[in-house]
Image (cartoon, rainbow, N blue to C red; front, top):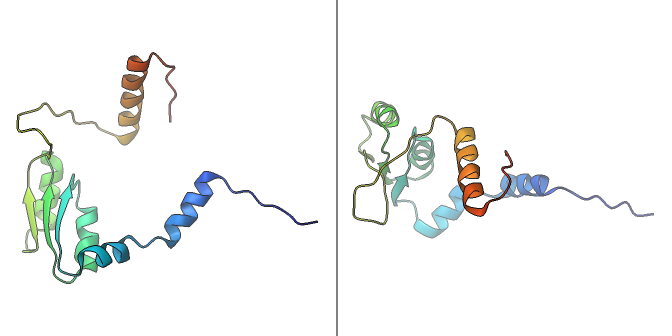
Length: 126
């Protein structure tokens, strides 16, 4: 009798990303000397990865939060491949309010409450 093994979506996703090479894909699309916009640069995690994997990138980091900007400036102060911009990116040309959350778990709860209030659905924590 043949044994059938079923995997969960989580396992399939984890296996996919183990095989997926984001940098290889990016290099095939944009080459080794790209201009990269790191929108929502946070603490520079993606910027570090780009610097490590591309020969001559020019990276423009966009980040509105003071705390993250200070980290970015300190981390990349002597790197002329990185340009730090303290701003948020949006498709509107006007000034908007910006809410800073203290944790990603809190963001998930706030989003669920907001969606729930619009759809009158039950709140489910994730």
